[in-house]
Image (cartoon, rainbow, N blue to C red; front, side, top):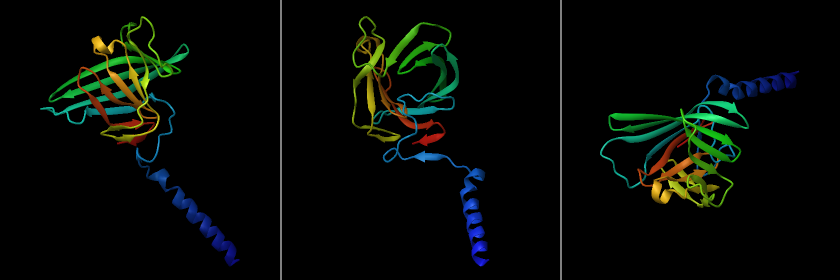
Length: 205
């Protein structure tokens, strides 16, 4: 009888301990040097996902400068999904908000202004060559083994996206880390580096 009571007591104790997280949920913080996120996507787009960027290391600004990007909404369109994106640029006491649409089908993403159908750029994560006649077509130019930004070190499955128009049109060179998204933006404007991301409820910083 004592053995049965002891067994019941142990089961109850284990159940109580393992259920604590239901009542006191905590954020999951990802150590970018030892783990990876659950997503297998170079640009994990989903409502609630967000990215925070600071000027690149070595860039000094006179005022506080931060770029926030988040996914506001999504809807099924044809064979793909439209994601409404919101960029908030803080520059000192001034802020600018830009809204646009990212339409995603498989490995391809098109960027359009919210009220226009004109495509600003296209990224094809499966392409390794430029598309003839399309200077705004981004393709995988390199696969850096290591990318170090404010949010940490990413040393697995990185891709560098290049646009032929970058040489004269100011399009950025974008570096993505799998499961995290855009981690570095370089070009003729302010170079940005990822400082924090929230992907599927998990925090990367």
